[in-house]
Length: 420
Image (cartoon, rainbow, N blue to C red; front, side):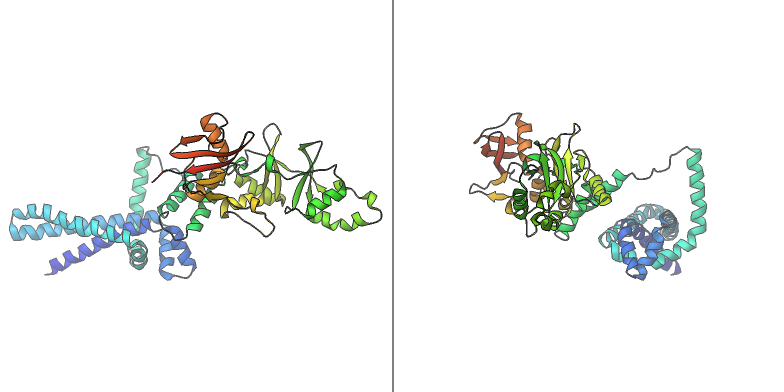
């Protein structure tokens, strides 16, 4: 009777060690740490165990093997006593089947489906076995390390930054089908992408930069500023690409008294310009974000490797890459968000200067943005020419129709995505 009770106890212990190994390795360290900070005592116990993962895994492997060996030996002995030589055959197949079901498949499946509850409930028992087996586990670990040196087996390399980011992206993708925290997942993914996206991908193109000729009369400049939604306006001299300074609207407003003073002749607009800050178009968004923070700046002009003006980028542009479009009360409709119109035919009508990244993020499409930043650029790169109005192209499963063209600019394009 004692033998059968012992068999049941060994089977329970085997269930425990096998399930605990799965739950412990599957449970997120970040989740445990966060729960421990909230005062969860069970999570605090697990957090301490997570800091000695190798010892814990060694304990679980040692305990599982000892229990399974003891279980097999005891059951074989009892079966031989009951059935003679046939007991060996029964033990080989019968006990193996029982161990497979009750000591492997069942506990591991349950632990995977109830990882958090299972792991938190067994933390105290696991800590007890870790203390019990620690001397043996430490000795075995020492032997294994010596053998690895003798056999010249390399130790596991530390995870690189790219591998860590890939792991986080994988975790986000695992939960992509869920509607829970959709916005947060998109923001986290966007933060990870900051180091891989360049200013060129998000900048305001030079053709869309609102700037002023510094030679204009002061009245005209002030009148324009008063009716402009922008807080910073580039001023150029001679030609539009020759930016001589950035006019801060607040600075100009503070100087209004000086302008309307009887001695207005001494008033100079140049005195209220800040020095333009030029950055390369190949700079990553993460690097530019650090530059903005370090310089306490919100505005930069973008140039290529030859110093030719390409556009401008603001702190708000980078933040919008993370949190989505940010519109305030001074923004005009032309400045805010994606402009998408659903046509009667079911196509999506968008501006040609819409970025591929914005389209992919909004529709969850997978258009390539490696060779072009905008939709118009994407089409011209693919067909290797400037298309005409009314032309239709089938590319990468999508159908594109050129709706409106102004000289060489593609202004409106209809898109029909693949039918999934």
